[in-house]
Image (cartoon, rainbow, N blue to C red; front, side, top):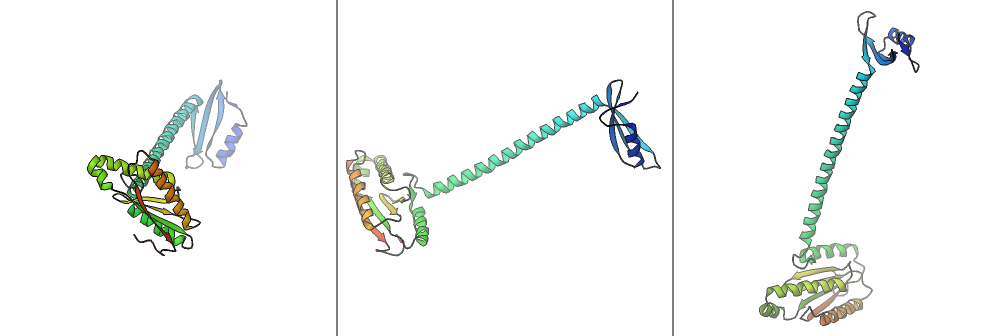
Length: 231
């Protein structure tokens, strides 16, 4: 006997067959679910009918679902790998760019990077007051000759550290070359601000036991002392 449930019926099957439609319906035979597939054969009014036990069909659907899940996981992993590679390339590029802007020893800006930053900044902030501080270490050659270049390098690094502790994060601090350093103070209220910062730096250097030297510092202000950056 064929038992139909959930609105399935032989009449529904007959109606769809007469309309030339393809489809399936579910019926039960002795308690076992079966799928009845039908589609037009294309010859007169013949119909091709297939019967499948639902357990077999469910197993095939389950296998298909598992394959789809595996494929989806593979795709997700593939795109994760691609994104990770892109991130590494971008990170490497940013790191390379950052390294090209910094002095290898002191890890502050190098001369070329500082010049580029200050030139671009002046184009956008030409009506404001800025200060350029240029300094070197007194008798630095003597430190290298008497205590060795290792000690000389340590002194250079210590000066870079002091400059970073005295000046603002927005100020451009660079190693100009050798024992020469430069600080570009952006947007200051007056030239006196630069003078006070120099006094603070000189005092810090004098009190620093790890810095066995003194400094010579020169100050020039924009726009009072010049209208362009050219060093």
